[in-house]
Image: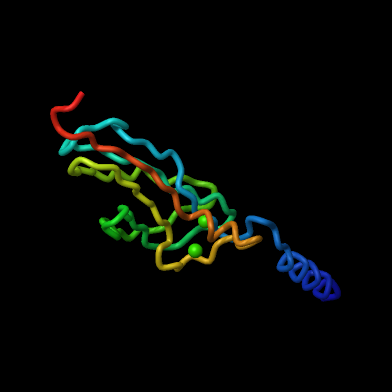
Length: 140
Ligand SMILES: [Ca+2]
Ligand SMILES: [Ca+2]
């Protein structure tokens, strides 16, 4: 078994591989609003995907949607995202009184996924905001 020390050296070397993406890294992608200029009480759908741009699969986590002035309006469990994959589209229906609202999508809201943290980018890129103005009904 003279080759055993060599194998151990190779295993140790592989374990030291500290690539930029050697952890999961969740980001919001493909954000779409069905109607960017709705009137009050008109239903608008907000669609987005969750991409794991890291090289390691991400396990289950919680995402949430916050609305300016109202706190969290939706919170859901997500089962996980494979490395270098994007989830199926997630669709949220919004139906508001007249006004301008800023919505913030927050991935891994409970920080259960340890993400690529070089320069803290992996944890800092988990939020995306979308602003939608609902005009008073009857206007326009
Ligand atoms: Ca991330
Ligand atoms: Ca995280």
